[in-house]
Image 1 (cartoon, rainbow, N blue to C red):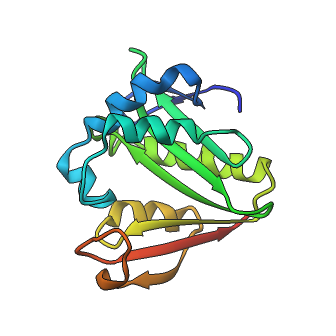
Image 2 (image 1 turned 90 degrees about the vertical axis):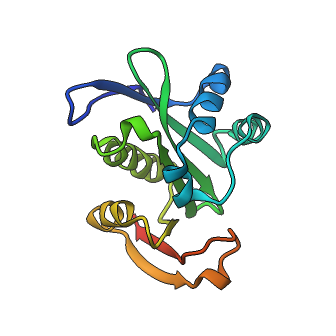
Length: 171
């Protein structure tokens, strides 16, 4: 993907681009400084530097893709991932740092993930989201995702107190 400049609702500009090998420290900074509020929607424990290092090492641009948003100061403020299960299906995940939420960055990142998925031949894209994350669910459904299944808290492998929904879209 070519780097793309995006203007947020605040007028600030960020660049969406593929992750690079030298982004590791920036990713560690982003993931380890997420607030408890943001973590609540992800999982019950915080990210560690070694875990982010492992996540970054999995990006191979064949099966695992990563798009980051970088601000004018060179900080990574969001990441979207696409993980291929097969030639035609993949899972996505996104995180926008607290300081960049509610500025339309999530929508821009989702657009980029959808374009990437189409470009690599994905026909079905799925994602998982906390039932409590109403903003994310609203955005996903606005983009054409539909809720396929709702998992009760006791069915969740994430150890969550609330349920999780699986969303999908055909591309």
